Length: 321
Image (cartoon, rainbow, N blue to C red; front, side, top):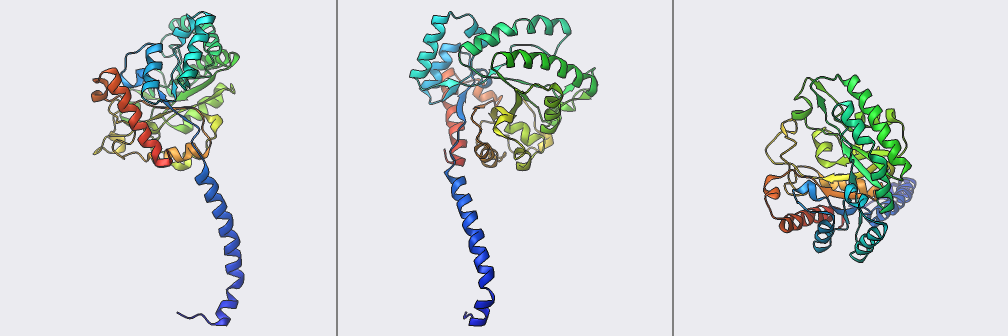
């Protein structure tokens, strides 16, 4: 097809602006493609059915190519200063850093249980700080048999504010994980926090600035959330991340929390988009699997750790490794 000189001249200004715009977009695309993940391939033994103490977990993490490992607050708290230094030296030699600890406080039961637990938190948080760990997370039960949403919200805000303040005093970031499946949040009389927006509201009500989310691809998926929801987050908003896939053949609202798959096992959850947004915000925390998967749980420790590492690595390859 020939283009007349008149047509060409008429389009010069448009082509020029497109060239400028294209150059800008090209630079942005190049910058985006040059981004590297900052998050770590993390081993959380309890999340994959592996029974291992802290030293065994470190050994498994090193053997199968993990980059971080979850700290056990009770273990590090009973170490002497010298033993703690030895532990950190071993981790450094093996190229490992800490992931995120679980909150060692039961805040979901009666007040006496909470009070007896939270009194121990300053000592455990101090031990984590002395061991160089900086992240703690917990999950939110998305329903309650007796407490209405508002009553439960107020109780969570009060109790978790106390935990968050203690953790902040000891250099810890504190993440909350919302739990998304309808099969769970609709299973009791009163539903509770089960979406990102609701978790953000709870965090805002708590009002302590060391708080953020434990983000889980499974709950992002089962809460019917999108990439746009992820784009509301910054690195400061995400304390830790769980990476899971979902079984095939079930509608989103029929998914069951205790029946998940290892990352990138089925492709049901769009992990490429999920991880791409974590790369884009520069998330620099741990990414671990939490599949609640029976075949995995029945494996011995080493095969389970190896299978988990391979699955997370496969998911990471979706965004360049």
